[in-house]
Image 1 (cartoon, helix red, strand yellow):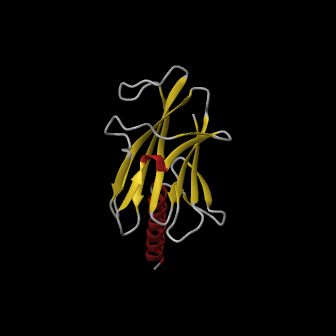
Image 2 (image 1 turned 120 degrees about the vertical axis):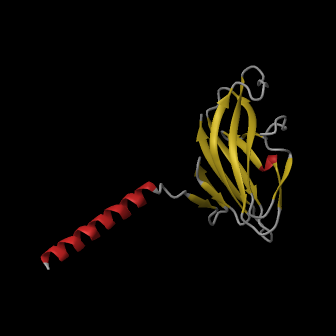
Image 3 (image 1 turned 180 degrees about the vertical axis):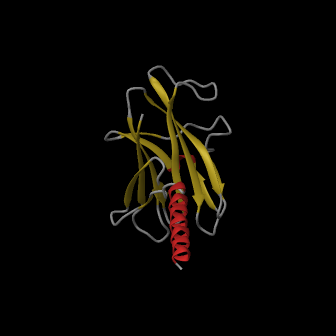
Length: 171
């Protein structure tokens, strides 16, 4: 009787340990950020930025001295922002590269460069319902700037005010 109880206790403890090990291996859930009452939201690199139609994630940011054999003008650098966009709606969505603007300071901003490489976001592109696309958005900015944010402006159908979603980062 005692031996059976001991075996059951050891088995339960082993199952609990195994369950905790599996939970630890699962990794962290992504941080999901949506616009609040003021129609704005700010996230960080790796956060899932959620709108009613799309989720987007800024997965990588880096400063570059060149991209695809192109170099910025003297005193500037390229900022390469890798963004994945998932259409969470049930209709295809038409998007534009300028939907994602780079901002800094009180009033500085830049639109992405015109695509000259297949990895770059084209001027306009469709994202089919349920599809995820990933593009490099390349911006040319002063080499002195180190604090940035990507701004995505979304105007939900039927809403008066647009949503502004920001992803902040430093380089």
